[in-house]
Length: 129
Image (cartoon, rainbow, N blue to C red; front, side, top):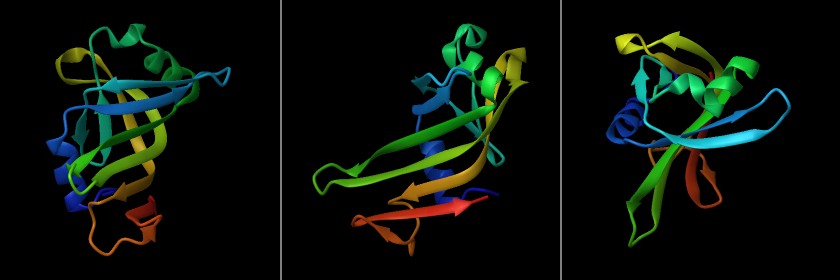
């Protein structure tokens, strides 16, 4: 599994993330999305997904990045989150609608896992899958 138990719990507690893709011409795009975690993958559906830039970019390049983050405590400025980068493809999701599936190759997390390395005074962990 590419995610720790704490990372899975955190991701499942969130409702909005962001997907980043790039076109075949190298034009970047980022979009807020709803998502679900399924096994070791992030799955992104949506209304009329086939008409979106993110869908076309995944079809063209087969790559994507995804991030979900928030502040555990705004008074103490305690950021936490998870970022992944990996291959991406299109599958038929629940209900028969097309869904983007991201297969993590590298996972970064901060503010979630005890004992992760320290980076710029935040707890960050990076793992190659």
